Image (cartoon, rainbow, N blue to C red; front, side):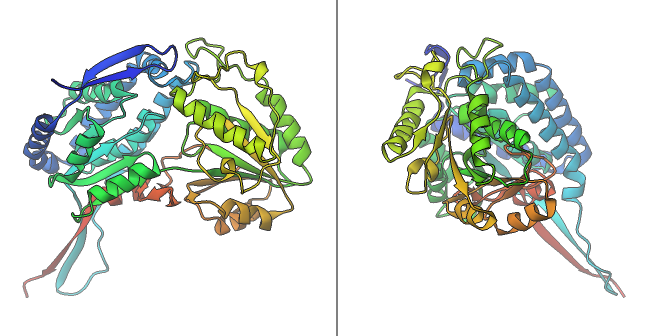
Length: 463
């Protein structure tokens, strides 16, 4: 009897949907269909692939209201915010489809008498995409759309928390008229996901998730010479210089820390503020945080929903309590948030001062609505502390001086440097991380590089 996947909604603890998990036979059917479809899809002209994928994007976006409601029930994000994910999905998908001709164009060296030479970007074959629940469309679109545009076939395995996302993709691809086998999805256990990764027909794995999960993917591929794109964790810092627009810095960083209940790989988890403006920043950040509305995410006035599950909330509670026991000061009174209850996924936001890097809350990924704030003397101390991390996904600098931001950014060990913004992916820019934040690159023209292989043509012409 097939194992049953049960998605428990963090909204009210009920089973939101049930699906049978696939097994070895399902993997075999999907991979065989993908192998059968691959040659024709690879030979399909790029313009035709673009047309079909554009139709698929339109088909999915046409159901954005229903999709947004499903997102709220599956992972708890407030209904007032869930539609934003579909806007981001469409922005990224359409950019990557439009960018395909430039990204996949032949590279032609300078002319050489008697020869014709060029480099072509060839598709890899079967790309397995393993996607998470926290931004289920925004993370998966980074791989699914460019992989297909490049001429690969795709199998998507989505999180057990958001299985309906994979099904929505499949519906849209079918409505658009993609040939059978070009895009498929599977609901799999962790063991069967690893079995799928090990399959010789998989040419590349796109994984978004935890550091431990990324390590497991690498181990599964250890005996095979195929690549993996790994988008993993973050402990992303913000730095507020003395010359910053303080109101804008407060608004942006508080939102960056607490949006999606802090469950974002590039969310703000630690803030360093110049001593000259530290006290004013903290006072304003507390005042803004106290205005948040924690509660039922299906209600339009809610802007802070539950965490994805009770265990995640309890982890954050424990990390915060540990910091307080070590000398940190919690500035937000949880009693202001009646929905905050131990033993549930509903957790009030929290701001901590008196923190330092001996505390896990400043070094270990929290993935929840708590942020620590430290006072710094200047740029050098801020850079040292921002780099004192096992992660390097993004770093945000708040200043009126763009030249200073560029100089500071050049010293930070990170994949993306923001100035006066945070927690946003521009599809025209490469999305990548360093250290434990992963390996590889998505989005921009660069995002096509890991989904293709260069093939050189070196022709000696007849005399």
